[in-house]
Image (cartoon, rainbow, N blue to C red; front, side):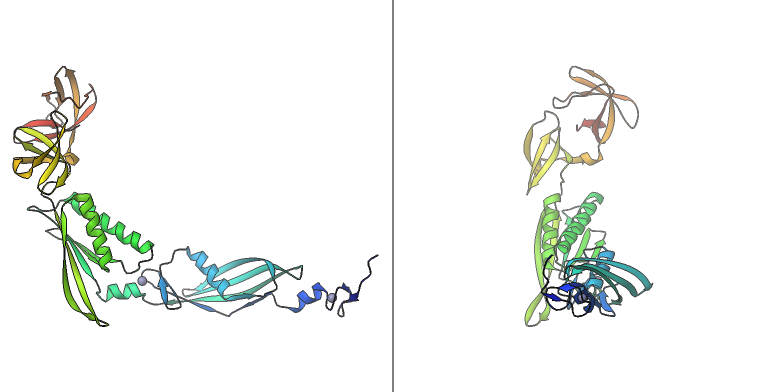
Length: 347
Ligand SMILES: [Zn+2]
Ligand SMILES: [Zn+2]
């Protein structure tokens, strides 16, 4: 038998000193909750305000509720092996009742307590939405084309690039890199941006995808806290010729692969070689490989291929081109040269 040095003065159980663990655990409150906690959020974009700082909500609402409820809860400092669970109930449009349940051990004794708190949701226009609704912007990206109108494909690429740049900057925490307007006008696309950095990123990415060049035009619009305030126009000029255009030069057909200033890097659709053409050597443009039609290969012979014209369903005979391998019964892509009434194999 072990010799006890003392007994608990309250319950008479053996104890090492003073109250036994059960009586100590029964004496303290494991858990206290604030009656309510306020969550400030933006009704437009759902950003959350913590202290004075706004941030985009990166977690599901139920996780936010759990986090808010736990922030209203204090757990006794001697508790160990803590497990917390939160049950939530929407009791009004701007109030969520929460029951916080905590299981833990106190002085080796397992304990469990619950307490109730409430989240009060408060709507406030965030810093970003205030800027947007106040008409604030730092630049405009203007996408135009050289001596022609920009086409539907270029409009779509420009808009998609702009939206991707906005999303990736905002995801990295740059809240003010917003697009406040994306306007399709007769001449092109105008993208109004909240930061110059976003404008720069969009202009660079559009130039990378569609070619051309861009110039920046700052305009002094005023002063803010002693600093000159500029708005910048990023003026993009897409090249006259585009990637995928098929052009005619000295009777040959060439697909434009790249545009480098006044020089076109092209692919010779007759013999399959790469070369460059000066813009001045181009006689005309017959279309773009994006608009190619599918023609059925009816027969193949040495140096000759028969294609079914997809418009007239008549068979046309074309010289074979050494870089393609037409197979009878399979389709091949062609562009139509209306002026010469010819089909041109583009692969
Ligand atoms: Zn005791
Ligand atoms: Zn907002």
